[in-house]
Image (cartoon, rainbow, N blue to C red; front, side):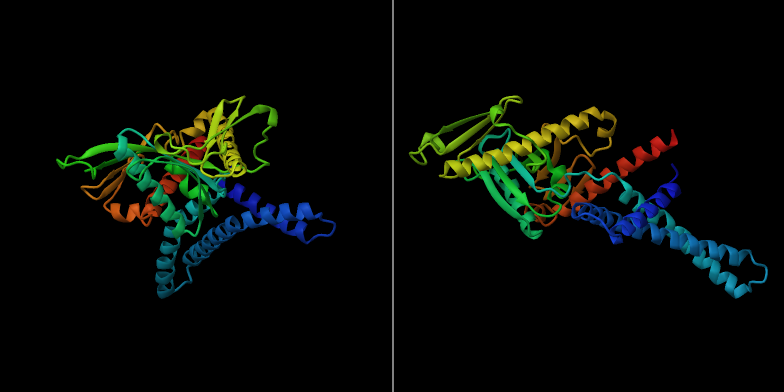
Length: 362
């Protein structure tokens, strides 16, 4: 289908939905569904109308220039205006194509963020803590809510592991490219000779699943309770408040001991388990569409090194798009993360558009 035909189809559908909403006998459920579709189509329709308006103006100017009776002054003005309009068409077409790209159903979801210390011992745990605080600050800037679900602190104040829920509009869309291995190069505070060390932390970003997204049956769960313990095996409390849930069909295990209440720990563990199962199903579907996977910025695999934070040089480099920013201080404050996210999103869109254009040309 040509681009023009696709655009006409969308404009027709927009009018159909508008008429259906204004009609009588629409059930409340249908009205909600139609309103959602109408809202989603609105941005696309606005972009299409802008494109068509420019194309119509260009056509009118071409007719004016083709008319032998047009005087020289008018002809010069029309020629200049036509050149400007034609130059704007590719950008307008690109905007429309981006809006036409299939939406990731998870983009508007809240997320579960897991940060774990990798190679590098205590320094890796400190870096994991720095990364987590970066995401906390980024969330604050966007007025998102952060709730720590599970944390295992290191002796020096970092995290061996920390799992948190981040709640806010578009959280998954903004954070989904953060999954992978983050590497740091710096002189550790414990290093007396001034040598630069390299260590790493892994990040996983999972869309938070709702009850309707994942069905979990009680018979598929094994729930164990035990006493919470701190560093060195010290008992945090003397009751069996810690919870470990095993999803038997997938063998996914989630343990939470952050709260003193067994009920609260179980609720947090179920939230994490639900997100893991939802992501596992999404991953299965993506693997079935292997060709589409090539159109993503990275695979999201936690074993894939995606970014390096070099403290001596004050730079951060994202290896997937060869982007380097000398704004490491602002990055760690969450202030420069949007620059990287915007670049990753643009690259992802470019790759998906290229795949669509290639398929259209076959």
